[in-house]
Image (cartoon, rainbow, N blue to C red; front, side):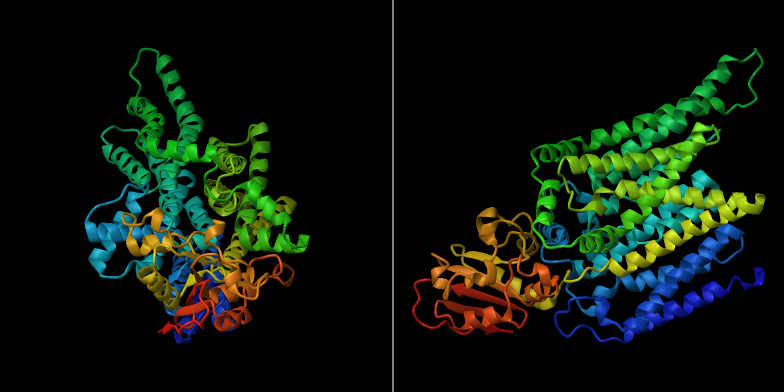
Amino acid sequence: MGDRWWLGPGLGVLGALAFIVGVVTTPPAAGYEVSVYDAYPLWTWAGFALALVAGLGSLFRSVITGERGWRHGLAIVASAYGVFFALPLFRGYYIYGTPMSDALYHFGIVRDVLENGLLPETGYPATHLLYTALVTVTGLSMRELQPIVALGFFALFVGACYLAGRAFFGHRGGLATLGAALPLVFVSHHLMTLPWLFALPFLPLLLALTHRWARRRRSGHEGIFGSILICGTVLVFYHPVTALVTALALALYALIVAAPSLWRVLQRRRNRTGRRDRDHGTFAVTYRLPFIILIPGVFWYLSIGHITQFLARAVTRDIDGGAAGYAGAAQQTSYSIRELVWEFLVLEWGTVVLYAGVSAIIVAVIAIRLLRRRGSRLELLFAAQFSAGVGVALLLIASQVLSRNIVRLNNYTLVGAIFLLGLAIAGLASQRPNTDGWKRIGVTLALGGLCLTVLGTALLAGAVTYEDNSHVTHATMAGAEWQHDHHQTAPETRAFRMSENIQRYFDGLSRSTPEDRQFHRSVDAYQLPDRLGYDDADSMAAVYENETYLVTKTADIEWAADQPPDRRNEIQSYSSSDLEQATDDPSVSRLYDNGEFTVWLVEPNSSGAGSESESD
């Protein structure tokens, strides 16, 4: 069997080549498309799945058998992900993300820096400075850089998990943790510009550096301590709340691993019998370990202003996405139990459910081992990290903060789950050669189940990462820019699935004012009525009292058509027939139309037919 290690990588190469060829040879989108997955033939996605399975399978085979092949498997997965992250560029999208995407807000700040040389007051300056530097150096636009930057931070996250796994569990454990980190567990968030996700790699990286530092037996290793402080400072400037979570992770490390080690050192020094202790490095450990406890305090102090603002908003519930609102919205829909399970527990939260569910079982096993005095402090450490992640998520849900976004609020939970999976896979792989009979069968089944969990999560994530109706076309941005440049301040603008981030993108944060707001993602005054108002009136003159801009998009019609049939009557939407009625409505003028984005002006006091539009 040792001379057949290449079979897995060989199949993976074929799969990766099929995926790459399928992507490169498929023409870009000719217009708006609902799903990126439907744009490519089935064999393209079969190649992608084969590349993931073969690549991860080769890596786990090396973990279990100790044979070579894991580097080839990693290279295969990396090549497939490289093309996968770049799909918005291949499809010709303007940007991945809806017109409500936070990326547009962040790009607006970058525009401020590029044009004015000044960084506006913001809690995430590192992200904006990074994009500013990359735009200046490469000459690429921000939207073109987004998939490149997203892939780079995903690689940084995977690499940090590998380094931490190797620092805590050894070479085999590092490879197992690397495999557990490779699935896109944060699904669509991996593809976007999100400071919290950019900050997350520093959590495992700081744990790895701190553990290496604490295990040093000699003085004169200030480089690691300096690296810890530098990474901690960078983390604060990427995302202060993630810095607070990292402080919690480091505090758990200090409590579970560092403090008992320090206590043992002090006990040995107290029990000396007068002869000089031959372990000359214990004093270095003694004075270094307390600083690990102080590091979270440094992080807290650096980010206290932004954290207190966040907590104040949490208390006042001034953040979109409350749990109560989510539950209320769910009760108003016609989802059946099966549809709810499929839509949320599988498509939306599937990666969290799989990793958290299996990790909860691992934590239960660790708890039993600890009760029998067979467990280690490292097992206790990562069981505590995972449990703390679950606690943070529950706290945010109870506070009604970001609870629509289960994946985001479980980011700490998923990091803990990755380490638990790496620990369990490495432990079972090490134990397997030393067992026989039924015990060996049980260990093999458990090991296979954990590896299949990772493989299944990778396939699920690959199938749901690109959400339907979640991209912006060039036509949509051209229309939004026309509306931005030509609109009058007095008439209100009504639209679906648009937000103030569009204005911030064009104006920058410094010139974007609430008094001239054109769009809002949720305020009713900025939303279109159902069927543009024709549900209750024959003419828009009876719907609007004052002049009003209406913005309609092909994306809105496609989004509504893509909803389950039972829900279409429960959502506000419009159809092509409503647009035809608007064309014949004498109180409505079509000002702009590029085929996918149309701007209308409702003039209630107008009696003549509307003028024709400016077209692209």
